[in-house]
Image: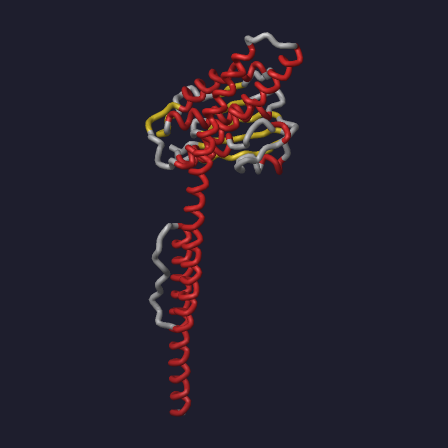
Length: 295
């Protein structure tokens, strides 16, 4: 009987040791998981540290730390390369602006000169291509400037109602030229958010420009009291797959070949920098773009 009690005591001790071992290993696994997630979210050179002295778990943490070091090196290389690429594109697009302006100026001077009907036709084609190239260069330059200055926004109280009205007024002639009579719905009360006024105007302008490109002749603009601005228009030229790519840099569809595809990328970047969210959906043949500005 005494021997049986000894065995039970040893079994209880072994079970207690195993339970403690399992508890410590689970704790270490949790520390590794939380540490790994934190290191991925933040830009830091610190590595994962765990409280347990278990050899296997410390080897696991060491292996994860080694991969984190490699990831940090790759992240730094990517950021450096991205900055260099943005600077190079900004400089190139800036350098192109001056000669393109001069070319457009000389083409305007040529309009007043005597020329044959065929020369006039060629001149009109050249003017159209030069103006298009100038427009695309300006769009590329603006995109690079936006991305290269992440801290260049100034927040102040802005009425979304007034900002939207001003943007619609600025685009009214272009919309009516396309036969688009926008249907606008706004709440009677002011919807105020702390935003950068110029950046917000750029966002609305790019979204309206996008509506001009893709609309089949209609446009609904809705501002909700919670700060959501919805642009909806029929667009048979799009598909649900294409809509999901509209925010990709340099992505264009057949209906908008005269664009670099940067307008919506700029709008999303600016919206997110102001703490908002910009999404696109394709619902029953309609392109629906929603910008939400949080209070």
